[in-house]
Image (cartoon, rainbow, N blue to C red; front, side):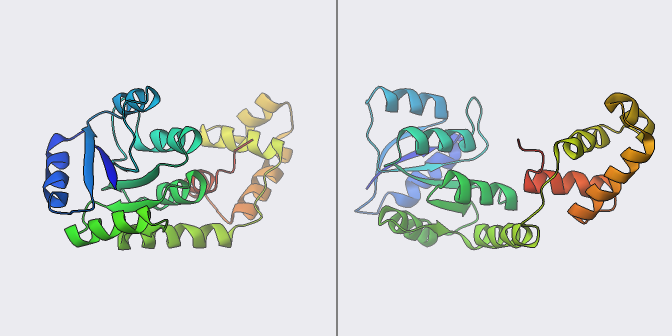
Length: 212
């Protein structure tokens, strides 16, 4: 198994190389501190990895964007995210939408890391305990709100609410009456099961309610 490691902290790369150094079936092909350099060499066919072990938060191109590029242009390469960030929405979007092959917390042990690499190389999805908990948490939220669909007008009003506009300001901006704005506001809160702008902002972010 030929593995590439991408992390903007060299000390992390050194640590992973040390942890995997004794594994006979795992070869560290090359390491990078910038995903841009890796993608450049990959496109130039200078490197041919089986699996990418990659951090999420990186300069130039972050792990999320790099994973999307890889799955689009190089679907045969397996991807594991290794990150301190196990935010539920991030784990959900990367595993369910981008379709990465594994998501690991940097808190995992050497044994767990080796098992994850082997599982993913064999074609299985592998999540660390923390990532799996985060994914289930977000999946339950999506299941709880499967049918939320905002109309175009409601999306316009939500955007203005998030910007801090009052009903009067919204009515002026959209050329509708304040009573109509209030009706829309009540409908928005009812649909999203929220009762305040902060809760609404969270629901919008979690469920991508403003997506076109």
